[in-house]
Amino acid sequence: LIVVLAGGVGAAKFLHGLAAAVPPDEITAIVNTGDDVEFYGLDISPDIDTVLYTLSGRVNPETGWGLAGDTVACLGALNELGEDTWFRLGDRDIATHLVRSSLLRSGLSPTAVTAELASRLGVRSWILPMTDSHFRTFVQTDAGRLPFQEYFVKRGQTDVVKAIEFEGCETAEPTPGVIEALRSAAGLIFAPSNPFVSIGTILAVKGVRQLIESRSYPSVAISPIIGGKALKGPADKMMSSLGHDISAVGVARLYQGLVDVFVIDNEDAGLKPEVEALGFRVIVTNTIMRGLPERERLARDVMQAIR
Amino acid sequence: LIVVLAGGVGAAKFLHGLAAAVPPDEITAIVNTGDDVEFYGLDISPDIDTVLYTLSGRVNPETGWGLAGDTVACLGALNELGEDTWFRLGDRDIATHLVRSSLLRSGLSPTAVTAELASRLGVRSWILPMTDSHFRTFVQTDAGRLPFQEYFVKRGQTDVVKAIEFEGCETAEPTPGVIEALRSAAGLIFAPSNPFVSIGTILAVKGVRQLIESRSYPSVAISPIIGGKALKGPADKMMSSLGHDISAVGVARLYQGLVDVFVIDNEDAGLKPEVEALGFRVIVTNTIMRGLPERERLARDVMQAIR
Image (cartoon, rainbow over all chains, first blue to last red; front, side, top):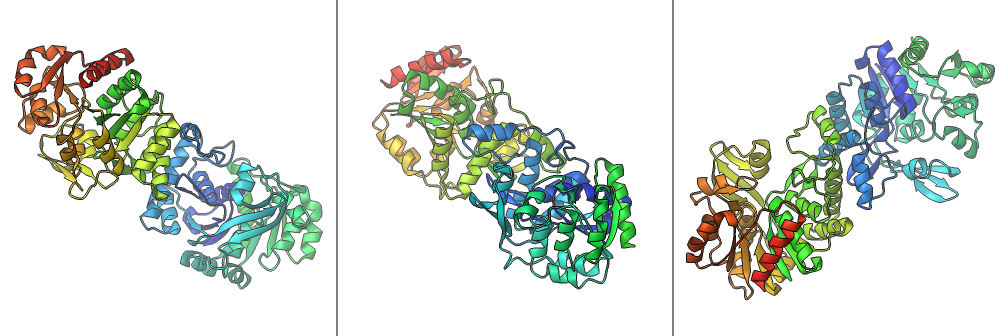
């Protein structure tokens, strides 16, 4: 069993390649739910959905999230009804949220609902929410404390992030599935996701960091920073405002003790000695994942490091 | 204040004309909620929505229900997710149900939620659910006992209705608004709706029939049966299988004691003496309401009878 710590788009692309490189049902993704949000009574789990949509071949290839060919008629009508509509929900996407919300309300856990959605979408890998408990990411900014999606979507990541807070992290428990996966894994992969608000949330769930620190299997991380920039999202700006180097080296420092092998992009080949000096084995390869062939090749490089 | 007992499409068309004939805020519609149904956690109130959509000029003119130009992308995705999708919900229509469901879940009553939706849609008449309590119509058929929408939509009204049952009618209370409207009305109108599953439900709410029987204002009914046929829906088949004449006379008999003036279509002019013999004053006019001019003219005829 290969376990992947996953955020949204970058992680989904990597998982897509991994599911081509190894049997899909030998993959378990532990997915960030700190970004989860509720609108109009719909329970929305953006990173889970991005992973499900990507692995089922339904994702919008232009954005990396949402469904291909989706429309926004419902959102337009919600806007006319005076509702806030800055969180973009497609009509077909809303079907997923309706099913999730209604299954949750019937008493199923987020883990059970995600398994049900994965099964209905034909996803054969194991997609696990990092916790079934309430857990919400907030950012402290110049403009005050903001729920993650307000910072990320509504305000377009324009605020300077001074601190990140996890509401619920004192009480949020990892699920039995998450604990079992981290205990029995043959290898662990940190997807190229935001180290603070995607991987950091998973590590903040009680006991998860300790389980990884005491692992007996190899652990590999792929840098989400290439040439001093995040391919997607605010990871680079957060690295800077939170006092870290905006580089693969900065990320590697965050993962010390949790990761054995660090994968950096060809563009960052010059950083290899610096990362090695931190105690990592370093793989230099192409980490940009446009289509499935690139994704699969990166996954094979990572699997080689694990084996 | 003019009070209208209302079902779905026929009532909505009449209310549309009435709102052109008298100031809209002098109209109170008491609307059937026995057809209400829940899908995917959405609280759907078909007759309320048909009235709101018609009065706000948003209704689909071809069907008489749903929203003009609506699409069904969400329903298609729900179908792909393995959900039952025989109840047709448009994408823009779902926005209404999302807002309703989320306001109800926040603790507002159906009456308060309907007032809020009416306000957001710019509807100036008072649209009141007949009750805020649980009340559901079932039909006993050859195929067994069916929830109303299963009979009406899923099975296309093909079953022979042997009896109609109202779940909750022993306990469902009229709202203060309904009681006040029926006490202080200047006139009461029975819209041309199904006498069993639209008007019959309203009359089955505790005390409503008694309030109407003891009225001190004129009461007018418009026959939903023209030339032995219902313009829309299964009223004619129900009249027959429940042992009534399929005619304006049959409907008039159902409304004895509740109605003073009975409006029949020109086509049924020959029935005038028979209806008069039942003790009604009879108006013969065109009751088919294609466009707004026809609707408004019918409303003016009815208002003249009330004055």
